[in-house]
Image (tube, rainbow, N blue to C red; front, side, top):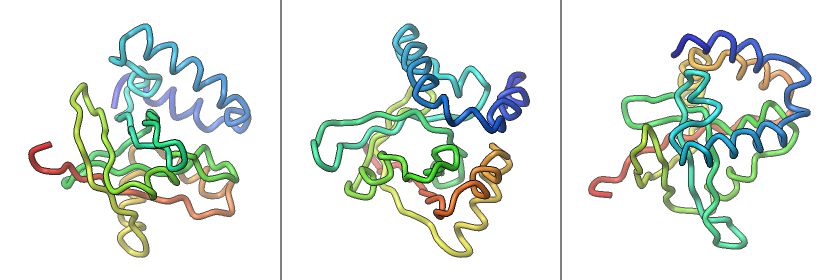
Length: 158
């Protein structure tokens, strides 16, 4: 975590923030373009992040999405929270339709296997994710859908 992380958590809890998600994405894309992918809004906020790249399930075109992550022993965990919005993020469907994905974490590319966690394992991992981003609890209350949680594990030799 960084010096700006507490401020990012407070901003992330603002109830009107999800309404501006398209603008936030544009700003994030501009930051990534100017810095040649070295920085994202999440990294500037001192939060652990990765960029998930997975083929579109219909187009087959690789799609990249910067995501908040929580590093764990076996790799990384990510959540399809979309700020607690009613719709599932598009990347979730793309990931579910793919056997593997590519991530960029701290400037290194990794090919990863993924699995969606449920039940007690999801509850345990969710608590770790809340330690990284307490606003997940707000998102969970705001939506009727179960926020999916995925464990990404690096594939050997890739």
